[in-house]
Amino acid sequence: MRFFLRITPFRLVPIFFRKFLPWYFMGQPVQILKAYVAYAKACSEIFSIVFLLRTLVRPWKSIVGTYPKNKMMLGKVIQVFTLNCTARAVGAVVRICTILLGIIVQIILFACFAAVFLFWITFPLLAVLGCRLLYSSIVS
Image (cartoon, one colour):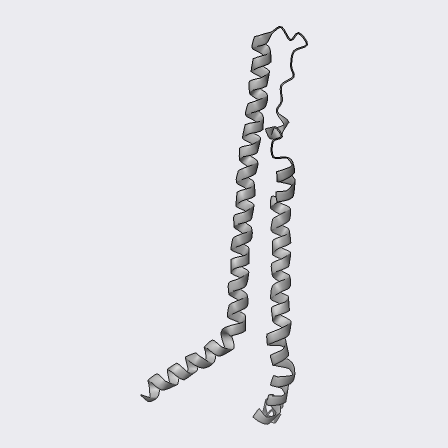
């Protein structure tokens, strides 16, 4: 209790300028940026867009048929060819959808980061303007 009695507004001003303002405008924005980078890396690991692009036309779940040794069995060759093409098409569709989802998640993540960062930086101005609006509405 005695501690609070010894603190006067004149003692708080140097603390405010020495500690709070550098933290608010330098320290915390860096932490917000680091958090965004960590989330972006995690999302890029989850969706692994580069790997999906490299394996775009590989068969889905490695489902492939083996061609018969006797190539004269035209029905069997066409059946295996159709299975292989279908597995590759399904794999490509699933991978393209996953790539698009990964890109959308990264865009949403960046938009959220930009909104948080912008709000953090402009909050003092918004608070002062809000107090001024409140004061003018009470006085008028």
